[in-house]
Image (tube, rainbow, N blue to C red):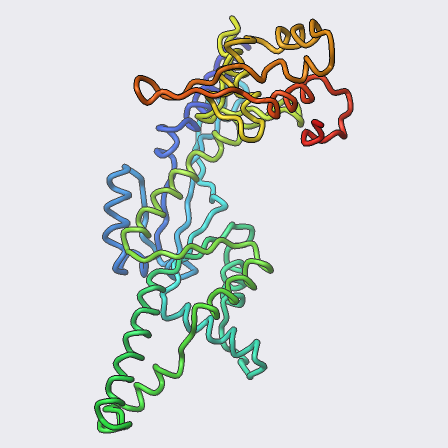
Length: 364
């Protein structure tokens, strides 16, 4: 019995350790589609993953240009005698997936959406929404992020092409140089130029997509950015269980956080003064210097309330803080000012009013 309890505790420690930042990446495998690995971004992606010491596999995914993640978990089987302490591993699919959409495909999908909105027949023509439906049918339950690379470059090329055509027309008295080209090349050019979209078309298509579908769309311009995004997603996927466990609270109304800007209070009360200062700083237009000046005069809420109670009149209490000096800067650049009557009245109202519906603006 003692051996079993010890084995369970050891398994719990190992499971907790495997979720911690710095350790969790060892249990994540990045699964890259072969088309993405062979794309212009592929070299950067592999370099980034190697530098982060992330495991990866290159396979033919069901969705071309997609990235998925697998987590290796250790299973401890506790039974009696021979089965005691037996260990096995299992790969679990993570819920995130990235899908890289080539800009030519994206332009065509936006174009088809525009034609559909204008009432033109687009039967069997793929739009962003139908493409996403196909991805979700293959990866049910996964959170999808679409990556579009080089859209700004597409629009720059379109602008350059229009300017060139305009110059050709001016130089040739209204006749474009395209008219003198061979028929085959001219026909190809006409097909390419027939599929043109604007930035407004993109905004409308993306707005419709994100209103109706649960999807994230990232616009990137450089292959290096694709590699950076896959590396960041890999780290986020690896650390997700640890962060979920960290953010769990015993009470639904209590939010715990280890964020950088949070003030930590230890068992000896160190940090309470900073909490009091931050509390005052929540007021609109209260700078750190102003809250520090008030805290220096009244180091705790209780001391401020006692000072209010000692005032002989309501007016005196409202103006209690108005002459506190606020100093900014140091040396020859140092300046000073007072808290002032308006803020003093608002702080008095905040700490003494029993009416929860009263607005802080109602200080007159």
